[in-house]
Image (cartoon, rainbow, N blue to C red):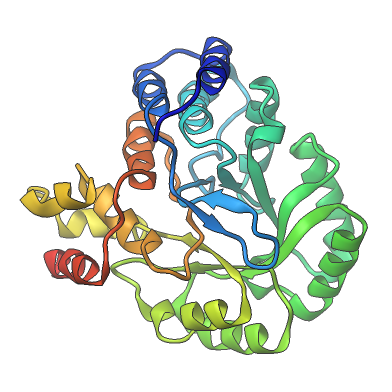
Length: 307
């Protein structure tokens, strides 16, 4: 998609302020050519890029410059190529929430991303946890606040609604990462008004297709997808197998991009949030936000390639 001169100059200025690196250089070149695919958040019409970033495990590092060097480049690539990208974190991810906040502050980028975090404790301790989360993220508010893995979800949802009314969160939702929670998630979606659902969905875990994703479409709920690579097991399944020749028909050059495009081409999915600490992998993942998306036939073809 062509960009005008004013947009190009803005991108160039942003590049000068970000750390150099091969992943960032490649991302910067691509950023001048096309814009990422976006999906609408039901109810508000806000457009979010289909590829974002998770921080579980990968951002749980020390506070030293050396500890964070690779993550600085990972974040820089995301910021440059995916404007207003979703970054998902949680207070239960070790130091990930604090590292995310520090790196965003260092890059002067807090207003340039969509920050999602969670309540990972009982309602009685939720206020203290949320206060700390906002301090760690260097922000008075977050874009999305979620009840993590259904922890004390009834009472926590009441608090989330209060904080949304107070302007401390723009959206609220619930999360889980296992298939055995899907039945309860469906019950909650039917009985509660939510903005977002975060759930596991991948070529290796397709249970969400049965009920949750259609229900989110019906109820007007945005969907974040965690575990898009099934904690790396999908890569093990294709180890030694070349990327199919037909992958180019959907503008994919890697298995990671095929796996991600399978997910985000589902009409109910808003954003997939793969996590990585490697700049090379981030650059690869971001490629799934661009080009043509698979249609129904091509989705089946991708699924068959994994079998």
